[in-house]
Image (cartoon, rainbow, N blue to C red):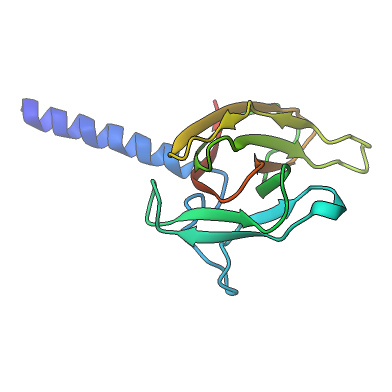
Length: 181
């Protein structure tokens, strides 16, 4: 009977962990899926440097993963300093919501990685975007964790997560955004 109860408890706890992982608001968080053009699905990449130093930024799959079989390898030809990958998600209007971001990253020694949340402006209400940032973490050539929490004001419904970095190549895996209840 004791073994049966321990097994039942483990199964229930396991289901709870599984349910929490499925609460991720992002798609393709482990970079396993490609779109019809062969690019990493659901993620965009941007080089926000000045026009004179902008480079082409790419996201590719790599087998050096910590979650699943693939991770993202991000490279830039010329850009330095203000590089990012991004994805948007919706939140209900009228409620202040708190979100927790977790991710794994790996980059060249001395490179910096952080996350940002940006809400889109509601032109009818003339709201300015809300822009929040995590602390920067320094890369050391090994896989590391980054965690941040953000509180989004009630009036906003669309949120973008930016994963920022200043040098490439850098790798990302297992990016999650979950609501903190």
